[in-house]
Amino acid sequence: MSGDLQQQAKQHLWMHFTRMGSYAEHEVPVIVRGEGCYVYDEHGKRHLDGLSALYCVNIGHGRAELAEAAAAQAKELAFYTNWSYAHPRAIELAARIAELAPGNLDRVFFTSGGSEAVESAWKLAKAYHAAQGEPRRHKIVARNLAYHGTSMGALTATGLTALRVLFEPLTPGGVHVPNTNSYRWSEDRDPLWAADAIEEAIEFEGPETVAAVILEPVQNGGGCFVPQDGYFQRVREICDRHGVLLISDEVICAWGRLGHWFGCERFDYLPDMITTAKGISSAYVPLGAVIAGEHIAEPFLHGNAAFNHGFTFGGHPVACAVALANIDVMEREQLNENVLANEGAFRGMLEGLRDLPIVGDVRGAGYFQAIELVKDKDTKETFDDDESEQLLRGFLSGELYQRGLICRTDDRGDPIVQLSPPLIAGPQQFEEIEAILRPVLGEASQRMERWSSLSRA
Image 1 (cartoon, rainbow, N blue to C red):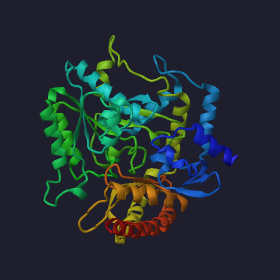
Image 2: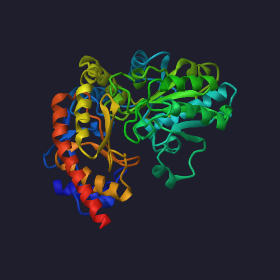
Image 3: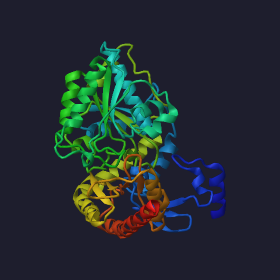
């Protein structure tokens, strides 16, 4: 069976964001089951899932109660649409989310995933402004290196050039501003300059043309960039001053990833909308949502008005049932509290790796952390493209997996290793991560020194 899976995968399965040619001479990693913080490949080898699959299996793998909730719902009502109809699980989940969400974020528009949530939020921002008599407001301001999805509208907000150029022209209206990576700032820089850059962009574009600003509480692209103290408060003031909506993109940062139900709570700001997915169901079933303030929904609640947008599977009954069970687990096991209680130990373990020559920066919040890899710690010199290729794809990614750790190596900004374990993780898993990560990073540093010497010879 193992051989059959490998052959069929190579012949028929088109994997996402994957260099398919990489598997011409190598096996496709085939994950066959999961339990808690661990997954097992087709050979029976156990791997610590230090990425929660893709920042999303928040309550861990193998939860029978979520499978049982899905099966029970499928027997009762496998599917009905939310287009002009409702069903109990969508109603119950919307009400549950409204209870958990901060402020007046009381209206829930379901989607199938994160890119759909971002698309929906941008369209809702445009429709809201049009309903308010400002139809020219259509632009969206996002940050450099930020990832907001890959559908055409979400890709316009995404600030990663390599993901964009092959698919241009994109949906018009994307504007990009600096991110909050203070590791790359001069020491005398105003800590809120990146927030003020948003206002400069709005004023340059013309406030009457800008619909929304979209920001992650902790930016994923580039490696877990955290905001400076007061950043989001300044951004909120800027948006209010110019009549621009603030969208908090929490596809990753909600549902306990930062130790709170929603990432905006961690940094004490109230957006007009939250986009979310992934951890809402711990990815046991695809589900996403836009959580909108009552003031955003109000223009669409009267007379003949309607938000003319939707997806067939948004608010799928089975997905909603699983999400409700997922929230039950999080509450019963106090997983937000677990993250807050253990994030210091997690971060401390990563900070302890700073003695390695290749570790330049450690940053993040909650169970969402990154290590930036550098060529020279004193100068913060980064690796060039060829060196990064050798470092990440030539060694680190495969070696970490072979030693039993799944994490993310990425160089769409500067080279990073990113870790985002299930929210049930604790000191035992942190020790296991260090036991693999430390020697592999140490060997990577030595390899890069040798490779650099050979390149100069």
